[in-house]
Length: 343
Image (cartoon, rainbow, N blue to C red; front, side, top):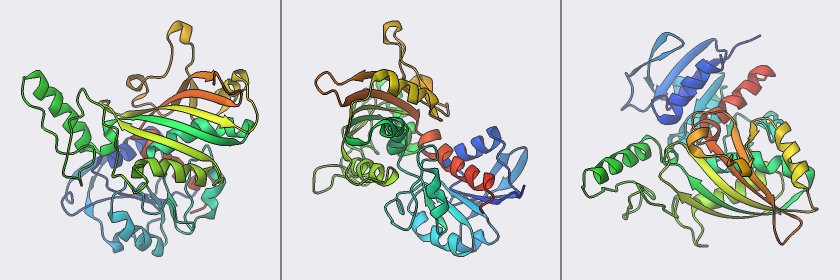
């Protein structure tokens, strides 16, 4: 089997570090490995599979001879992804730069793997909250086409990067010490006003648009439609940042074209890759973010019918934002390319 020449862009960040962990855990094959980052992080030494690598500054020529490039995300993707693709690399990009480009497939491998084969050099990783929800939607959609989704998310601070995790830590320490909690990052670093996340919920992720939905919420709308190949699916989201480290949780109400029984939906979830059913309310067993952190599978539970609509299904789904919501999903795309030797 041919092994790819692999590059990781953003190797020193939270998602880049998770790429490295998963490459080791999953024995991802590679002929050579190149670690890339901004000039600020260049020179850092990282160890992968027992070998030390010096992180290089990412430049267009860094991708010469690279077969697969894992991009951890960020604004640099817009510039460097086309350059890498021009040099023959297949870019799997975790930023939002190309997700809605009609020429770029947007992929959750368990949901729409065939879309990978349509790429023209760049494959987009969906938003973390979309990925997690899509794993719960797909088995239901296969039983009866989805018409409408109402979703509320409870999103971990890891979605704001290492800085989000560090800010939650520092605010808890400040509160315990009786000090004022300093907020510098959330709901979004680009805005003038910030709120503490410790002991708080913030019903804003990213900036608000003219329709009063946030960019994060509109990502869930448009990306879900693209992944499921149906722009008539109505998605009504509310995204909320919560003081949890790594795992996103989502409460989802779905209306399907025809009624689906709880029994059939649970059976479909049991059989669906990447999804683990944890649903025994009488024994107080259900998914929780503390117990899905650092896990590859998403957990689904609290599965129950809508009380007033026989076409409605409620469920609660939880998954690790850094793993399945970012690095793992991208690496699974790379694994598909290796398995099919299509690089």
